[in-house]
Picture 1: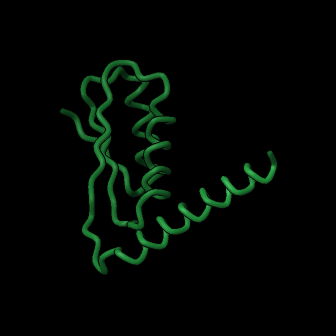
Picture 2: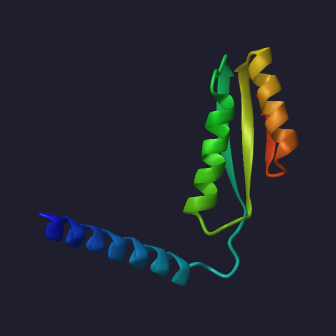
Amino acid sequence: MSFALTALLMVCGCVFLTEQFLTWLWKPDDIPEFIFVIPLKGKVENAEQIVRYHDTWIKWNTMSRNYRIVLLDDGMDEETVKQCELLVRENSVMSMVKR
């Protein structure tokens, strides 16, 4: 049983490393900036968690550091607006716009 599990984990690791290598190999020299928009509406209890999750996901899953995160105020309540304004002040890749 342990041999089968070890073999499975080795195969998964090889697949992951191959994927990472090919992504790096095929990466263009000049990646254009991309903009990730997060629409937020009403009272969002976990706004900070949502925004930080997407920021981390972008950093880990793309090879680009040339990105912006736009928080779209689609009728957020005051508390959510304050949370988002704090995040924007802390992070230079983030901005907030009102719909």
